[in-house]
Image 1 (tube, rainbow, N blue to C red):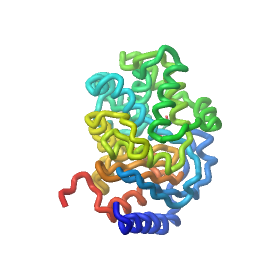
Image 2: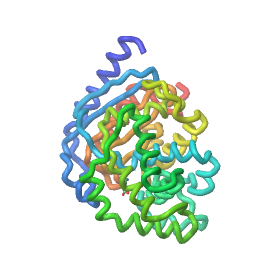
Image 3: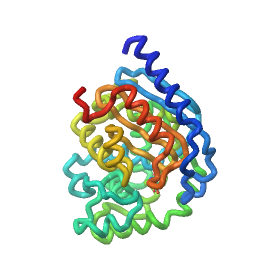
Length: 313
Ligand code: GLN
Protein backbone atom coordinates (compact mmCIF):
# COMPACT_ATOMS: atom_id res chain seq x y z
CA UNK A 1 0.00 0.00 0.00
CA UNK A 2 1.20 3.51 -0.74
CA UNK A 3 1.68 6.18 1.92
CA UNK A 4 -1.56 7.95 1.12
CA UNK A 5 -3.42 4.63 1.39
CA UNK A 6 -2.05 4.32 4.92
CA UNK A 7 -3.33 7.79 5.79
CA UNK A 8 -6.71 6.85 4.41
CA UNK A 9 -6.90 3.68 6.50
CA UNK A 10 -5.93 5.67 9.63
CA UNK A 11 -8.73 8.13 8.83
CA UNK A 12 -11.34 5.44 8.27
CA UNK A 13 -10.51 3.77 11.60
CA UNK A 14 -10.59 7.13 13.38
CA UNK A 15 -13.96 7.97 11.83
CA UNK A 16 -15.44 4.57 12.74
CA UNK A 17 -14.23 5.03 16.32
CA UNK A 18 -15.68 8.53 16.60
CA UNK A 19 -18.98 7.53 15.02
CA UNK A 20 -19.71 4.61 17.35
CA UNK A 21 -17.92 5.38 20.62
CA UNK A 22 -21.14 6.79 22.09
CA UNK A 23 -23.27 3.85 20.95
CA UNK A 24 -24.52 2.32 24.21
CA UNK A 25 -26.99 -0.33 23.12
CA UNK A 26 -26.64 -3.97 24.05
CA UNK A 27 -25.13 -5.49 27.19
CA UNK A 28 -22.12 -7.50 28.28
CA UNK A 29 -22.57 -11.28 28.24
CA UNK A 30 -23.48 -12.33 31.78
CA UNK A 31 -24.06 -16.09 31.51
CA UNK A 32 -20.31 -16.34 32.09
CA UNK A 33 -20.07 -14.29 35.34
CA UNK A 34 -16.55 -12.93 34.65
CA UNK A 35 -17.70 -11.34 31.37
CA UNK A 36 -20.37 -9.27 33.13
CA UNK A 37 -17.59 -7.46 35.06
CA UNK A 38 -15.60 -6.35 31.99
CA UNK A 39 -15.56 -2.54 31.38
CA UNK A 40 -18.33 -2.06 28.80
CA UNK A 41 -16.93 1.20 27.46
CA UNK A 42 -13.80 -0.35 25.93
CA UNK A 43 -13.66 0.03 22.18
CA UNK A 44 -10.78 -0.85 19.85
CA UNK A 45 -10.23 -1.31 16.12
CA UNK A 46 -7.38 -2.87 14.15
CA UNK A 47 -6.72 -3.58 10.49
CA UNK A 48 -3.86 -5.67 9.08
CA UNK A 49 -3.15 -5.74 5.36
CA UNK A 50 -1.87 -8.74 3.42
CA UNK A 51 1.42 -6.87 2.97
CA UNK A 52 1.79 -6.79 6.74
CA UNK A 53 0.83 -3.21 7.64
CA UNK A 54 -0.86 -2.86 11.03
CA UNK A 55 -3.30 -0.04 11.88
CA UNK A 56 -4.94 0.43 15.28
CA UNK A 57 -7.34 2.78 17.07
CA UNK A 58 -8.87 3.02 20.55
CA UNK A 59 -8.22 0.76 23.56
CA UNK A 60 -5.67 -1.28 21.74
CA UNK A 61 -3.91 -2.58 24.88
CA UNK A 62 -7.07 -4.03 26.46
CA UNK A 63 -6.98 -7.81 26.84
CA UNK A 64 -10.26 -9.67 26.56
CA UNK A 65 -11.26 -13.31 26.05
CA UNK A 66 -11.26 -14.53 22.48
CA UNK A 67 -14.35 -16.70 23.12
CA UNK A 68 -15.96 -18.06 19.96
CA UNK A 69 -13.43 -16.45 17.63
CA UNK A 70 -11.18 -19.30 18.82
CA UNK A 71 -13.49 -21.69 16.94
CA UNK A 72 -12.12 -20.40 13.63
CA UNK A 73 -8.52 -21.20 14.51
CA UNK A 74 -9.22 -24.61 16.03
CA UNK A 75 -11.24 -25.43 12.91
CA UNK A 76 -8.22 -24.39 10.84
CA UNK A 77 -5.97 -26.75 12.81
CA UNK A 78 -8.43 -29.66 12.63
CA UNK A 79 -8.79 -29.14 8.87
CA UNK A 80 -5.02 -29.07 8.37
CA UNK A 81 -4.73 -32.30 10.39
CA UNK A 82 -7.76 -34.26 9.13
CA UNK A 83 -8.54 -32.69 5.76
CA UNK A 84 -11.70 -30.86 4.71
CA UNK A 85 -13.76 -34.00 3.99
CA UNK A 86 -13.51 -35.13 7.62
CA UNK A 87 -14.86 -31.77 8.83
CA UNK A 88 -17.82 -31.96 6.46
CA UNK A 89 -18.56 -35.56 7.38
CA UNK A 90 -17.96 -35.50 11.13
CA UNK A 91 -19.07 -31.98 12.06
CA UNK A 92 -21.08 -30.44 9.18
CA UNK A 93 -21.03 -27.14 7.31
CA UNK A 94 -24.59 -25.83 7.26
CA UNK A 95 -25.77 -22.81 9.23
CA UNK A 96 -28.12 -23.83 12.02
CA UNK A 97 -30.02 -20.53 11.95
CA UNK A 98 -30.26 -20.91 15.71
CA UNK A 99 -28.37 -19.51 18.73
CA UNK A 100 -24.75 -20.58 19.26
CA UNK A 101 -25.58 -22.90 22.15
CA UNK A 102 -28.72 -24.40 20.67
CA UNK A 103 -29.62 -27.99 21.59
CA UNK A 104 -32.58 -27.83 19.20
CA UNK A 105 -30.16 -27.39 16.28
CA UNK A 106 -28.77 -30.86 17.00
CA UNK A 107 -32.19 -32.42 17.51
CA UNK A 108 -33.84 -30.88 14.44
CA UNK A 109 -31.25 -32.25 12.08
CA UNK A 110 -31.59 -36.03 11.78
CA UNK A 111 -27.93 -36.36 10.72
CA UNK A 112 -26.98 -34.37 13.88
CA UNK A 113 -24.89 -32.26 11.54
CA UNK A 114 -24.09 -28.73 12.71
CA UNK A 115 -21.06 -26.57 11.85
CA UNK A 116 -17.69 -25.88 13.53
CA UNK A 117 -18.64 -22.31 14.55
CA UNK A 118 -21.48 -23.09 16.95
CA UNK A 119 -20.71 -24.57 20.37
CA UNK A 120 -21.73 -28.13 19.46
CA UNK A 121 -19.57 -28.28 16.34
CA UNK A 122 -16.72 -26.37 17.96
CA UNK A 123 -16.49 -28.79 20.89
CA UNK A 124 -16.64 -31.73 18.46
CA UNK A 125 -13.87 -30.04 16.44
CA UNK A 126 -11.70 -29.88 19.58
CA UNK A 127 -12.32 -33.61 20.01
CA UNK A 128 -10.79 -34.17 16.53
CA UNK A 129 -7.49 -32.42 17.35
CA UNK A 130 -4.57 -34.86 17.50
CA UNK A 131 -2.77 -35.55 20.78
CA UNK A 132 -2.05 -38.44 23.13
CA UNK A 133 -3.60 -36.68 26.10
CA UNK A 134 -5.19 -33.42 27.26
CA UNK A 135 -1.84 -31.69 27.78
CA UNK A 136 -0.63 -32.51 24.26
CA UNK A 137 -3.87 -31.38 22.66
CA UNK A 138 -3.85 -28.13 24.57
CA UNK A 139 -0.19 -27.59 23.70
CA UNK A 140 -1.00 -28.08 19.99
CA UNK A 141 -3.87 -25.57 20.09
CA UNK A 142 -1.97 -23.04 22.15
CA UNK A 143 1.11 -23.23 19.90
CA UNK A 144 -1.09 -22.91 16.82
CA UNK A 145 -2.81 -19.77 18.13
CA UNK A 146 0.61 -18.33 18.97
CA UNK A 147 1.78 -18.87 15.39
CA UNK A 148 -1.21 -16.88 14.13
CA UNK A 149 -0.76 -14.11 16.71
CA UNK A 150 3.07 -14.03 16.30
CA UNK A 151 3.21 -13.92 20.10
CA UNK A 152 2.43 -16.30 22.94
CA UNK A 153 -1.17 -15.90 24.13
CA UNK A 154 -2.13 -16.62 27.75
CA UNK A 155 -5.39 -17.94 29.19
CA UNK A 156 -7.30 -15.38 31.28
CA UNK A 157 -7.56 -17.53 34.40
CA UNK A 158 -10.51 -15.65 35.91
CA UNK A 159 -12.54 -16.15 32.72
CA UNK A 160 -11.50 -19.81 32.50
CA UNK A 161 -12.52 -20.49 36.12
CA UNK A 162 -15.76 -18.57 35.72
CA UNK A 163 -16.80 -20.41 32.57
CA UNK A 164 -15.66 -23.79 33.95
CA UNK A 165 -17.87 -23.36 37.00
CA UNK A 166 -20.94 -22.44 34.92
CA UNK A 167 -20.53 -24.86 32.02
CA UNK A 168 -23.47 -27.22 32.43
CA UNK A 169 -25.10 -26.26 29.17
CA UNK A 170 -22.02 -27.00 27.07
CA UNK A 171 -21.52 -30.27 28.98
CA UNK A 172 -25.07 -31.26 28.07
CA UNK A 173 -24.45 -30.46 24.39
CA UNK A 174 -21.22 -32.49 24.33
CA UNK A 175 -22.90 -35.46 26.03
CA UNK A 176 -25.79 -35.27 23.56
CA UNK A 177 -23.39 -35.32 20.60
CA UNK A 178 -21.49 -38.23 22.17
CA UNK A 179 -24.76 -40.17 22.46
CA UNK A 180 -25.25 -39.75 18.70
CA UNK A 181 -21.67 -40.75 17.84
CA UNK A 182 -20.92 -37.17 16.78
CA UNK A 183 -18.21 -36.46 19.39
CA UNK A 184 -14.75 -37.92 18.89
CA UNK A 185 -13.10 -38.22 22.28
CA UNK A 186 -13.58 -37.92 26.02
CA UNK A 187 -16.31 -35.39 26.84
CA UNK A 188 -14.78 -33.90 30.00
CA UNK A 189 -11.27 -33.54 28.54
CA UNK A 190 -12.44 -31.93 25.31
CA UNK A 191 -14.97 -29.67 27.02
CA UNK A 192 -12.19 -28.44 29.29
CA UNK A 193 -9.89 -27.73 26.33
CA UNK A 194 -12.73 -25.91 24.57
CA UNK A 195 -13.34 -23.78 27.67
CA UNK A 196 -9.64 -23.02 27.90
CA UNK A 197 -9.40 -21.99 24.24
CA UNK A 198 -12.38 -19.64 24.69
CA UNK A 199 -10.61 -18.03 27.68
CA UNK A 200 -7.46 -17.12 25.77
CA UNK A 201 -6.71 -13.43 26.23
CA UNK A 202 -6.08 -11.27 23.17
CA UNK A 203 -5.84 -7.62 22.20
CA UNK A 204 -7.70 -6.33 19.17
CA UNK A 205 -4.36 -6.06 17.41
CA UNK A 206 -3.59 -9.74 18.18
CA UNK A 207 -6.94 -10.69 16.65
CA UNK A 208 -6.38 -8.69 13.47
CA UNK A 209 -2.90 -10.22 13.10
CA UNK A 210 -4.37 -13.71 13.56
CA UNK A 211 -7.13 -12.98 11.05
CA UNK A 212 -4.68 -11.59 8.50
CA UNK A 213 -3.49 -15.16 7.78
CA UNK A 214 -7.00 -15.94 6.51
CA UNK A 215 -6.91 -12.83 4.31
CA UNK A 216 -3.60 -13.97 2.86
CA UNK A 217 -4.34 -17.54 1.74
CA UNK A 218 -2.76 -19.19 4.79
CA UNK A 219 0.67 -17.54 4.69
CA UNK A 220 1.34 -15.15 7.54
CA UNK A 221 1.75 -11.57 6.22
CA UNK A 222 4.03 -10.72 9.15
CA UNK A 223 6.01 -13.85 10.07
CA UNK A 224 5.97 -15.35 6.58
CA UNK A 225 5.05 -18.77 8.01
CA UNK A 226 2.89 -20.99 5.79
CA UNK A 227 0.24 -22.07 8.30
CA UNK A 228 -2.63 -23.32 6.14
CA UNK A 229 -3.26 -24.45 2.59
CA UNK A 230 -5.08 -21.89 0.45
CA UNK A 231 -7.82 -24.48 -0.19
CA UNK A 232 -8.48 -24.87 3.52
CA UNK A 233 -8.59 -21.10 4.00
CA UNK A 234 -11.39 -20.92 1.40
CA UNK A 235 -13.41 -23.48 3.34
CA UNK A 236 -12.92 -21.77 6.69
CA UNK A 237 -14.05 -18.48 5.12
CA UNK A 238 -17.09 -20.22 3.62
CA UNK A 239 -18.23 -21.39 7.06
CA UNK A 240 -17.54 -17.94 8.52
CA UNK A 241 -19.73 -16.41 5.77
CA UNK A 242 -22.72 -18.60 6.55
CA UNK A 243 -22.37 -19.11 10.31
CA UNK A 244 -19.86 -16.65 11.78
CA UNK A 245 -22.45 -14.43 13.43
CA UNK A 246 -24.83 -17.26 14.39
CA UNK A 247 -28.48 -16.66 13.59
CA UNK A 248 -27.78 -13.20 12.18
CA UNK A 249 -25.14 -14.43 9.70
CA UNK A 250 -27.54 -13.94 6.80
CA UNK A 251 -28.23 -10.33 7.70
CA UNK A 252 -24.49 -9.74 8.09
CA UNK A 253 -23.73 -11.19 4.65
CA UNK A 254 -26.56 -9.12 3.20
CA UNK A 255 -25.44 -5.83 4.72
CA UNK A 256 -21.65 -6.19 4.99
CA UNK A 257 -20.59 -9.06 2.74
CA UNK A 258 -17.44 -10.15 4.57
CA UNK A 259 -16.74 -13.52 6.22
CA UNK A 260 -16.60 -12.79 9.95
CA UNK A 261 -16.64 -14.36 13.38
CA UNK A 262 -17.84 -12.98 16.68
CA UNK A 263 -17.20 -13.93 20.30
CA UNK A 264 -19.20 -13.15 23.45
CA UNK A 265 -16.13 -11.39 24.84
CA UNK A 266 -17.02 -8.57 22.42
CA UNK A 267 -14.54 -9.24 19.63
CA UNK A 268 -15.31 -9.70 15.92
CA UNK A 269 -12.92 -10.47 13.05
CA UNK A 270 -13.79 -9.91 9.37
CA UNK A 271 -11.79 -10.88 6.30
CA UNK A 272 -11.42 -9.30 2.86
CA UNK A 273 -9.56 -12.07 0.98
CA UNK A 274 -6.34 -10.92 -0.67
CA UNK A 275 -6.58 -7.47 0.95
CA UNK A 276 -6.89 -7.19 4.73
CA UNK A 277 -8.40 -8.38 7.99
CA UNK A 278 -10.30 -6.19 10.46
CA UNK A 279 -10.75 -6.82 14.17
CA UNK A 280 -13.03 -4.82 16.44
CA UNK A 281 -13.78 -5.10 20.15
CA UNK A 282 -16.39 -3.67 22.47
CA UNK A 283 -18.16 -5.74 25.14
CA UNK A 284 -21.84 -4.83 24.71
CA UNK A 285 -23.64 -7.51 22.69
CA UNK A 286 -26.88 -7.72 20.77
CA UNK A 287 -29.44 -10.49 21.34
CA UNK A 288 -27.53 -12.95 19.14
CA UNK A 289 -24.30 -12.42 21.13
CA UNK A 290 -22.50 -10.17 18.64
CA UNK A 291 -20.81 -6.91 19.73
CA UNK A 292 -22.95 -3.94 18.71
CA UNK A 293 -20.13 -1.44 18.26
CA UNK A 294 -17.84 -3.97 16.59
CA UNK A 295 -20.48 -4.80 14.00
CA UNK A 296 -21.19 -1.14 13.27
CA UNK A 297 -17.50 -0.25 13.05
CA UNK A 298 -16.67 -3.14 10.72
CA UNK A 299 -19.69 -2.35 8.55
CA UNK A 300 -18.45 1.26 8.26
CA UNK A 301 -14.83 0.32 7.55
CA UNK A 302 -15.84 -2.27 4.92
CA UNK A 303 -18.11 0.24 3.21
CA UNK A 304 -15.45 2.97 3.13
CA UNK A 305 -12.81 0.50 1.91
CA UNK A 306 -15.26 -0.81 -0.72
CA UNK A 307 -14.73 -4.31 0.64
CA UNK A 308 -17.44 -6.90 -0.09
CA UNK A 309 -16.69 -10.41 -1.31
CA UNK A 310 -19.82 -10.37 -3.48
CA UNK A 311 -18.87 -7.19 -5.31
CA UNK A 312 -17.55 -7.04 -8.87
CA UNK A 313 -17.03 -3.25 -8.72
N1 GLN B 1 -17.22 -19.86 25.57
C1 GLN B 1 -18.51 -19.44 25.08
C2 GLN B 1 -19.51 -20.54 25.21
O1 GLN B 1 -19.16 -21.66 25.01
C3 GLN B 1 -18.36 -19.02 23.65
C4 GLN B 1 -19.65 -18.53 23.07
C5 GLN B 1 -19.48 -17.39 22.10
O2 GLN B 1 -18.51 -16.64 22.09
N2 GLN B 1 -20.52 -17.20 21.30
O3 GLN B 1 -20.65 -20.33 25.53
